[in-house]
Amino acid sequence: MAKGEFTALNSQSVVPLAQYRPNSASAHQPVKFETLFVGWAKEKQPMQKTVYEYKRALVNLTSFLGHDDATRLTPQDLVAWKSKMIEVNMHPKTIRDAKLAPVLAILQWAVDNHRLPDNPARRVTIGLKVRAAGSKRSFSDDEAATILAAANMETDPVKRWVPLLGAYSGARLSELCQLRTQDITEVDGIWCMRFLPEAGSLKTAGSERVAPLHPAILEAGFVQFASKLPPGPIFAALPPDKFGKRGGNGTKVIGRWVRRLGITDERISPSHSGGIGSKQ
Image (tube, rainbow, N blue to C red):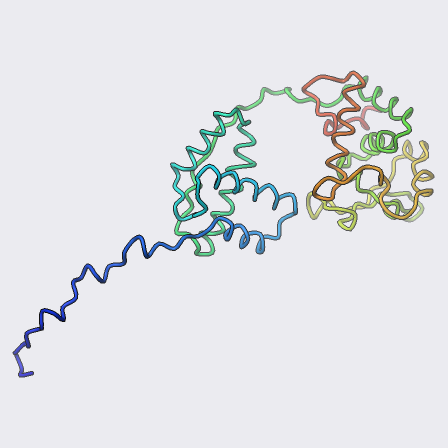
């Protein structure tokens, strides 16, 4: 080509610019919620119960949406989902903690790992009514005495020992229900309970500990009771729940039992209202 000259292009060789633009329909690559969930779970290694609850939230969402493509999810979709849950009278705390929070966490993992460009759940929230002070309370002196007196008369090991152990240790009911015979041990001449992950999941890493047994527990004969049991769970008759934990069913057993004792105030959560030991 001579300097300053241009060769005319054959019009048939010219490709319209529009053909270089990706077709939005063909360029769209779906990202399944299930794929994001699997990736999130592999990295975070959550407890089995958390896996179950988060997956259930995603199943609920995809059922509402009618599709399983996270790239099509919008904030408006999530607001509509929230509205539907409110419409069927789902408790606001359940909506926030068991539905919106899992979706938010998984989508944020997807953003952080470059699976999605943004998180449509980031600003979707629900207001919770603040409970009036004093709406929840611990057991009164009389109620605590009623529970411990009833426990002393029980032949069912769960009802006999779990309330007593909880009263004088402050341990969580789930921790107590999964105790094993080898967790009752003598350390430097002091009888103790060991709370170890080998016995079952603990709420936090700091929950692993050794707690001395209160004299009232020793006087009641708990060590002698435990020493006569075969190796393994102390409350073996308490069936594990679907996560393999005895605490779930233990909560139900103790809750119903406390209510039958006449302690029916709704401000009291039978298996969580502490302070019994400090009142004795």
